Image (cartoon, rainbow, N blue to C red):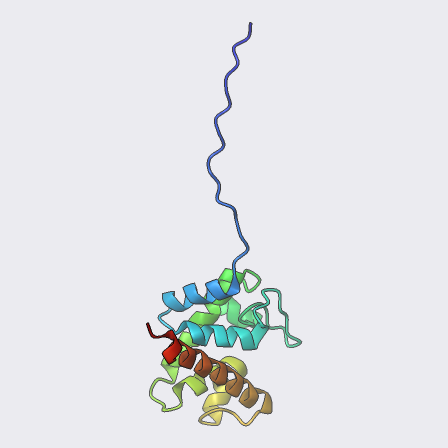
Length: 156
C-alpha cells in the first residue's frame, strides 16, 4: 500500500479587506503628525472618499493628486494607500511652508487646491471662486470635527 503523506495546512492568511478611506486618513495623519480631522476634511472635499475619483483636470484618487505631484512624491496615485500618504505628506509640506502666517491652514489648503504659486502670487488665498469655496468647505468641516470632539457630550 502506498504511504499517504498529509499535505501541510495552509498558513493562516488574514482576510484582505479593502482599505477604508477614513482609516487610511487616520493612519496617514498619525504618521505625518497632522490632525486626522484635517486629512478627512480634505479627502471629503477632494473625492467624497471615493478611491477611484478622477477629476476633469486629471486629479486622481482619494486625495486627488495630479499625476506630476504624485510622481514628485514617488506615489502611485491609483493605489489608495499611496495616494493618501502622498496627499497627506504634501499637505504637511504646505503647512510647514506657511507656518509663519496667521492664516497658515487656509493658505496650505488653498495651495493644495490651486498650487503654492497661486497662493504666493496673491500673498494668501487666491481670488478664484473654486479655491475660495474649497477652502471654506474644508475649514468648515474641519472646525465642525474639532468642535464635535471637544463638545460636552463627548467628555466623560
